[in-house]
Length: 219
Image (cartoon, helix red, strand yellow):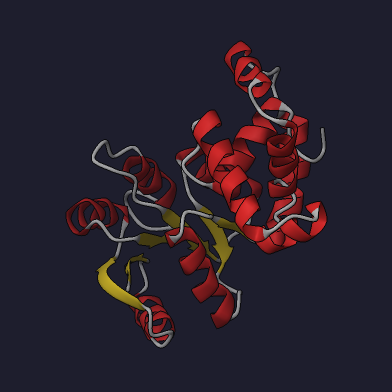
């Protein structure tokens, strides 16, 4: 069972969210938070498998709450940002804060449930519309690669570089396997090796790393 904490300042949204995800059968809501302060407190206390975080909340917002939860030294608690706002600053802020996924509230019920499962499995998720804009915007904002990044990049195999580029396109394991003509299990093996080498917690943070250091699909 996937344990989820829901953080949103609107009670009706939290209630609706709970009904939707618990209908999936393999997800249970173990806590609700009405602002960023409660989100951090409950996340560290309950240690859920996924925190579903709204961005705009009174007091401490979702981005700051995500940053504090992601920085917890006692173990990683993945955060899925679920919001009505897809402004660039919110997307970048959430990713920089360590979010494992970003999904718009307009997504259908199945997409929401799949996103939670993906984040719980350590794969991360990013709305496809946002993926394209992030790719373009990060390419424009990209600073010169750090020396340490270059050293790490030199250790990547050609296959791991292929995987990194395909991750930046938002492809799933199955889609990458089809593109590379290999088995999904082999893709999973290479993804695990890639994450370990670059020090990324999940696939989405690996994409952020690629954007920063010029190793994404736009390079």
